[in-house]
Image (tube, one colour):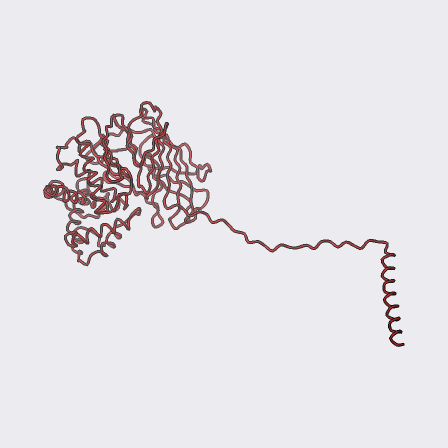
Length: 488
């Protein structure tokens, strides 16, 4: 009876609940409110600033050149990509503009990072370019310079006190040397640009990469070209490229005759004027033999070409993968290797190591390349013509009774002969005595290490003696006291 009552009560409750629910739905007059969709605040995303590519190892020079050979006029569009490896932020660059030492150098425009620039200063050989903003260390700036060169006639006014000017033209030759503005080295907070002197070299060069695109105003009568770098001939121009070079040179003549040979993968070419075939062949032979020898004694030659050019002036001079020999050396050539033409060919070839690979301050410490270049001559004769060794010492060196300190700057040489006696010939004597003191094995191990550590750098006397001390236990202090005014 009780269970029946509970059942009926539960039934009544459920029924009533259902009725209430139905009644509430039926009597609603407004739709149920619609709630807005939920909103979400996205989590912040990380932002990345692209890392700029690393600065190139060296500056890169692109020179687009139009040569009017007959008018002695050259038009240049130059682009310099300069990486700031100085360790300091820079607001200006200093360039050497050597052609401005003579008339005929005219700048049309200067741009920095593709923006026109009016704030630049040209004073003698110094060109200062203000930058639009600071260049931070390891950043890169691009400088574009458009200019023309109306070349001077390269004649020697006083051969007793000054070397001939190579830059310019003669009756049968056009020579472009130190012909483009280049950024000078920055050392200890200073741009290194020395004043020129009556003899010796005053410029200091960083290693750089070059592309030179050469066209002619009169392609049908274009001259023969000798140049630093590898030529690639196109229908309307020739492109020359060279990497890790100190100075790009060009010589042009319609009278050049040529002879070439291979030394490994290096093409060695001799450019000479008619009637000098035998001299041209001898210069080619001596330079090729020296190249092969110095590859073994010092370090591998870094380029694929080497040009030997007969200069229509009384001088010889080295550039990258290129050097001049004086016409007088050809005139004096006697058909044998005991001649100026032979040993100066060797001397200039060696500068492809001691100048080109291992750079130095040629004004303040010229002995670092010239002493080694002079001593390289005797290494050549020892190897190829040992019977001429004594002749070389007596004729090339001791005939002049050399005296003086090796480590003088060009400005204290006291004249061309006394300068070369000290820097070249006293330097050769010092190196020979040092070699005897150390022994051959240690001496050449030192030179190879010096070449390896100094490659593409600018070295000082401190570097020389620091590396030397690592290769010998011999006491050479007396030699330093005898030949050097400074004790290193």
